[in-house]
Image 1 (tube, rainbow, N blue to C red):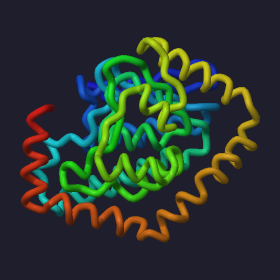
Image 2 (cartoon, rainbow, N blue to C red; image 1 turned 90 degrees about the vertical axis):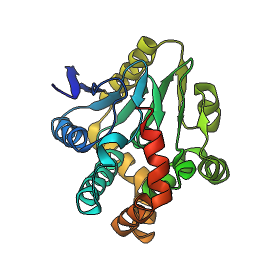
Image 3 (tube, one colour; image 1 turned 135 degrees about the vertical axis):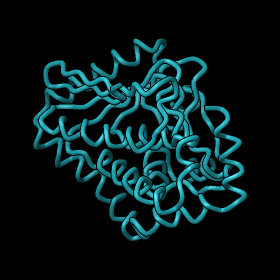
Image 4 (cartoon, rainbow, N blue to C red; image 1 turned 180 degrees about the vertical axis):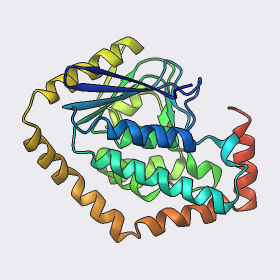
Length: 249
């Protein structure tokens, strides 16, 4: 069964996560997203969306907790590379945050240029610290870029989830709209407007916007910083917290 639904409407490519109810991120979904981005290089703009309950719950804990480091590391490094690719993707990207976007799900949303979130009982945020994990370096840097250093520090240190309205106030999402369908429709409107603009100029603007964060990522250790995340992941106390969290999937 396909984990993604991909549609083209004119110059806009829409990728919808369709991997069960929670859209958990595991090796197969990462591979599917890589292939989807390969197919979007000629699009004028790209939309990333989920379902009405979950944009994505984050990493597929029930699956990943069964992996040893030799198996987990290639997946984790591939996921981190996917996030970097999405962040630096030369086409404008708009995320329709249709449901909860937590941990790794929030990382994917933050990697997009714009975020439109559906109102209601939905949450977005990076709660890694509550599990004994650091937020991945690139996600930390991107959150500081969009929310500002002080607000991002509060969110990261406390592992807070935010309601749509609070996320808008923090600058994490750009708009909050009443319904799931409205969020998707508004994402399409934004994407269509962006796709109508000169692509080369937009690509240069995006390169300028992302250059500072990508340089800071490399200066902060880059891939080695991502690999160090796994030292925390395999701590016994962290594994116990993750196993407890996995029961909610």
